[in-house]
Length: 146
Image (cartoon, rainbow, N blue to C red; front, side, top):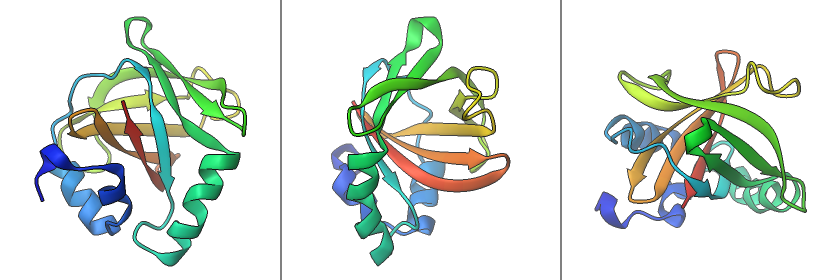
């Protein structure tokens, strides 16, 4: 598969092992800027993932808005896409694999999400794959489209 033509549809069909391999072989990319469309993936490649994907998007999380020059982002949450739950953005070591990733750190910016740490890499132009952690436990994968 040509990474230049990868889409969200391609990623949601992948298993966790395939997503991890893609992530490991992808560059860190530029820290994104602006509004993204988000897709959360729980248990990638499973039937449950296909059921949960539209529910999460409708009811809980629709993406992130990056303010690169100010080093922070806000999540788009609730059915109304309220901009809330701030994270600090910086480059740091990946927990998924060796090398750097763009880190989305909520520990000092959000009471609600203080144990959350996300990381992303650019897997195709304008398409980022991420992992969300609660402490050191990976919770889910997510996709950001710019």
